[in-house]
Image (cartoon, rainbow, N blue to C red):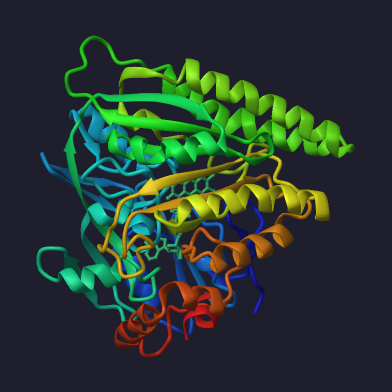
Length: 450
Ligand SMILES: Cc1cc2nc3c(=O)[nH]c(=O)nc-3n(C[C@H](O)[C@H](O)[C@H](O)COP(=O)(O)OP(=O)(O)OC[C@H]3O[C@@H](n4cnc5c(N)ncnc54)[C@H](O)[C@@H]3O)c2cc1C
């Protein structure tokens, strides 16, 4: 059978499905699942295909592209959409009604179907979660045999917890309901620290009641922290420049510079001198311009082009228990510098991270046991990136880092098992109840889970 070629958004993961189906209705999905002859296994659905791991790969099988993207209903505290609706479109529709998501990820392309069953991250606000799926309170799925199933937080909390980590292996999601809240003005500011200053200030910073995200610059011994807080008392017109500048640097000009410098400057000291100079300007802009008492939370969401261009970037992620984070971060700064001096490789962008609250809403939540802080390398995948990621994975696993199945590339079964242990058995047991014929599992999950 002739195979198709489909890549993820970044372009580094290739899938060869035998059949591709654009799902415009529930019946389209039911039709696929009921007919294994025309639509071979594995059947995988993708939303925007932004994942940095092969979680959506359907080699030799059937790839369902979720085209169903309608907003079905908005009430004062909930939003119901078809699974292909994306985060930015949904946030705009909410804002028009003076409503907002709890978690406004920087990625606008995140589809509702993916948010419901896969990992996400954003810095959490006090008293709130930082994983989008934790605010998803209902999903409707087409099961592997073609039957329909509705799962709700209110009705089946334990199953909902498992669904949130099911990665499309229980069924294909076609409808999603989010818990939402009233649109509230948001303060943001940034401050830069040395590593030592940051670690000694961290207990005080946590006590201030901000969400905490950070940009890490190990080669310059600097950390720029993004502090956000809801500010319901804000008056006047919101500042719409602050986030658009951040979004432009983060989503367009930063990665484009990394890409261009990589192509045009072969001498590493000059190449990384240019990148370090750009990063210094970036820090200055974050501190001086991305600062306001009154911004719109949804303005943080970036519109990435549907087909990636020279501004594309990729990344990885491990989450560390927050009490172990200071040691892990100190080691990480040294690890990056040692790796560069020994192997000649460093990322051509930067590293970021998020502080994310304890959260048991998903079986494979990386913050199940307590609040975590993440270390996420970001790159245009310059030569040496994959080898670096193997070393980074080992480094993080040795320090009790927890990966995310759709955002941490090159995982091994041992690393995943160390992080999630018996929870993987639970997931696989429930998966088999819904999919005894292995219609939905692909090689990526088979190798890691079973
Ligand atoms: C440039 C960039 C920036 C990013 N920024 C962030 C960020 O700020 N925060 C964050 O959390 N993540 C971020 N990510 C990661 C991204 O959010 C996740 O990988 C997310 O899963 C992408 O959503 P998607 O719709 O593209 O999912 P896909 O990659 O299409 O799918 C993810 C998984 O869900 C399954 N799936 C998708 N739809 C369905 C469905 N309807 N039914 C059943 N299974 C389904 C797929 O098979 C796959 O296993 C970023 C990624 C990139 C490339």
